[in-house]
Amino acid sequence: MSELNNIALKILEKGKGILAADESTGTMTKRLNSVNVPSTPENRLLFRHSLFSAASMTDCIGGVILYDETIKQDISKKISIPELILKMGSAPGIKVDTGAKVLAGSPDEKITEGLDGLRERLKEYYKLGAKFTKWRGVYSISENYPSKLSIQSNAHALARYSALVQECYMVPIVEPEVLMDGGHSAEECYKKTSEVIQKCFEELILHKIDLRGIILKPNMILSGINSKNKISNEEVAKLTIKCLKNSVPSEVPGIAFLSGGQSEIEATENLNLINKYNDTNFIMSYSYGRALQQSALKYWSKDIQNIEGTQKVFNHRAKMNTLAAQGKWSKDLEI
Ligand code: 5MM
Image (cartoon, rainbow, N blue to C red; front, side, top):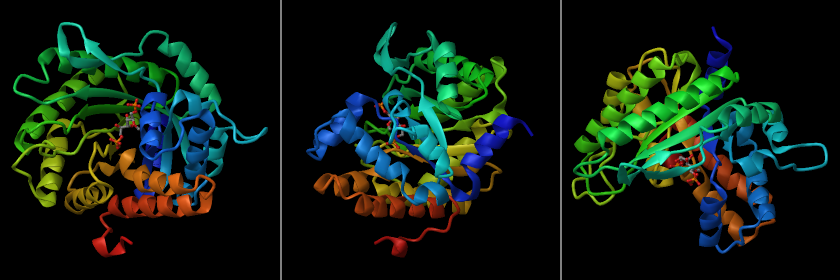
């Protein structure tokens, strides 16, 4: 078994999932402003430090995706953030894309940038302790979108990124996110997501990626946020599995979903049903940002020194999702 495969399997072992704490400073500022906390480097660190030292880091969180600012922060003279995460029994990871920019040739769409100088940045992150990385391509659905140009160019970038990451002994998380925004149907989401994922694997294979050493981070198959025809959670789970079964090569060890704007409970419930119906060999777990942090952030903002209380809220969410990643969650476990 390859070393990269071992890392991927360890991150997702026993129902463990990934905490996506890689909000760029702009996004984190929006999150903190929404709960009336000033966005300073100290406050960003205080909140994240409280999550990264919570008990669920040992039992539920197999990996944490960090942002450049955080991976370089220390919690004391002797311990850096990646060291703390390792000490808790989890793996530090890093977002390495530099964001989604306007796609020349199709200005209503986005292309993710960050390939220039990536090989050198990866070496630095590896030295800081990163075991895995993340790159997110974004696609929106409307009548003519995502275009072939956006599907092709984002897949190409994800593949070039993955090749550089594996060359540097880390596991790339490949995140093609088909956004929930819009009034499209779940069938439309199914069709476009399948097209996007299939193109990603076509490019990953062309770029000679070891598929046993990646983690796929896709969206679930959902109807658009403004759609009048919502489908049931059972249908979400079944369509999501069908899409992945038809589009993801069997060598891929694990799939860790993004929450994409679902509520915390919805993201947990859908993951639970996916695991109940999962008839594939893929591990199906979570790599949630908002759906793991929302309640904890709200609680913390009332008294930012109340670390214990904040950790309790976070531990609960992490535990619920780890149960869901094993198909063992039920609504009555929620408090
Ligand atoms: C944590 O948010 C990440 C995006 O941050 P920026 O937009 O600030 O760069 C994002 O990539 C995240 O990792 C995934 O979208 C999953 O997060 P959600 O909240 O959708 O689970």
